[in-house]
Image 1 (cartoon, rainbow, N blue to C red):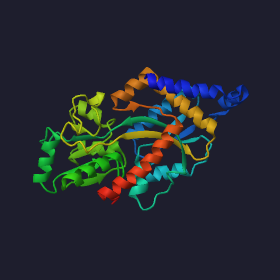
Image 2: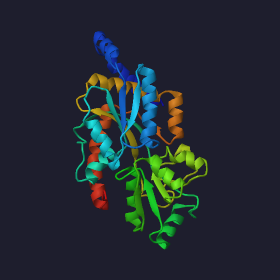
Image 3: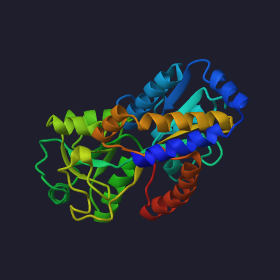
Image 4: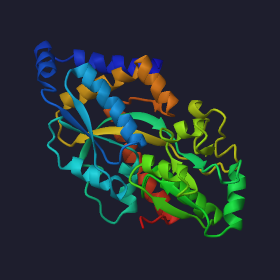
Length: 326
């Protein structure tokens, strides 16, 4: 949290360097009406959970309503495309996972330009992907599950929040590296994917922690591993994929905030500052950690650098693994 506080103070100091009249004018002018926060996946998923936390705190801090609009489909492409068409006036925001930088390499055509359609506000949180199974699956470890899949061809499948999502990539890395007969079942949100596995419609679920953790706590899912460099505080007893014997299956998952390209810099700075401020609050920080998120609240410049790096990275990964959208 000390890092977050330092980042918040740095942004606040930058704002303080503006002329007093300019700062006052922007503070008075924005936001003057409700702000739409587009989440390109359905309700109950990780982007939705984070989007609602951010929207609630911005509403409280800025005195105007920030509301979530779920626009799902095509691995997040439909919602992101809709956000790209919005006016760059600060009244449309986008909260999305790294499918934003993955989909350009996965799909032949997408309705946005990941380099030009948006301006980054902040990389809000980091997280990972959890590998969980229905309690009826007789596996206590990842190795147990691999043996089951290998000895029962065409029996097992895995649910994710959609094509191009981190869960899909982890599933495909696992499938390709071990030559597994494993079918991908994409949904429009992590919430729906998790619900399908809880109900027994799918046997395995690969998704970020937020919708999985409560089901694991209630005994409705069994978490076998997290695809992360360290264990998660929210699932402290669950091994990493490296612990489980598969060190190459790792993915740095994140959720970021964007606005349409051309949004005034003062508004981007204002939003960045307020989001960073919200993540220093004890109730927000505790809730995020309990859901498997690691608060970050980067600067726009730091986030822009990461986007550039990841756009190049995922082209190489997806081509090397021969991962397809269909």
